[in-house]
Image 1 (tube, rainbow, N blue to C red):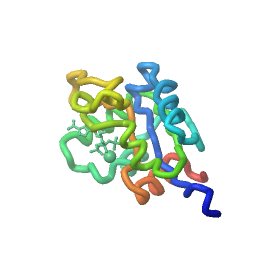
Image 2 (image 1 turned 180 degrees about the vertical axis):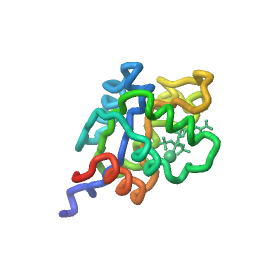
Image 3 (image 1 turned 90 degrees about the vertical axis):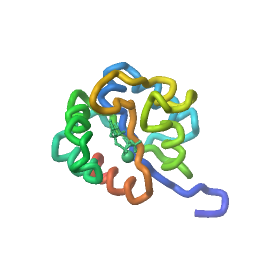
Image 4 (image 1 turned 30 degrees about the vertical axis):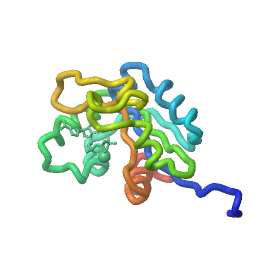
Length: 145
Ligand code: RTP
Ligand code: MG
C-alpha cells in the first residue's frame, strides 16, 4: 500500500431480525454506504443456536442471554461485511447506543428504534467492537471469506 491508499479495515454488521422484519435493511445499508464504507459481502440467513452461542460467547450466563438468542432466532438476519478505514468504530458510531431509547437522534438505533417492552433490547443492528472481534465474527458468519 502506498501513502495515498487507505488501510483496509473490516467489520461485521448484522441487521438483526427486527430490522429485517420491519423492512429497514435497505435504509441501514444505505446509511453504511452513504457514510462512505464499501459492502464487501452480504448474506441473508437464519442463525442457529450454535452460531449464536459462538457469536455471543462473552454474554453467556448473563440474564439477557437466553432472550437474546431467542430474539436472534426469530427471523432472518442480514449479515454484512463492511469495509473502509475506521469502519469498526465508525459503524458503532452510526449505530448509536445499545439502548434505542437512549441512542442519539441521527444514529440508526436513535432514529429507527425504540423500546418495544420486551425482555431484550431489540436494537436493529450489531457491529463488531474491536479488530479482534471483527476477525472472529467475520470468520463465524462468512466462513471462507
Ligand atoms: P451488539 O453487540 O449487538 O453490537 O450491541 P452492543 O455491543 O451495543 O451490546 P452488547 O452489550 O454487546 O449486547 C449485545 C446485545 O444484547 C442485547 N442486550 N439486551 N439488558 C438487556 O436487555 C440487553 N443488554 C444487551 C442487545 O440486543 C445488545 O445489542
Ligand atoms: Mg456487543
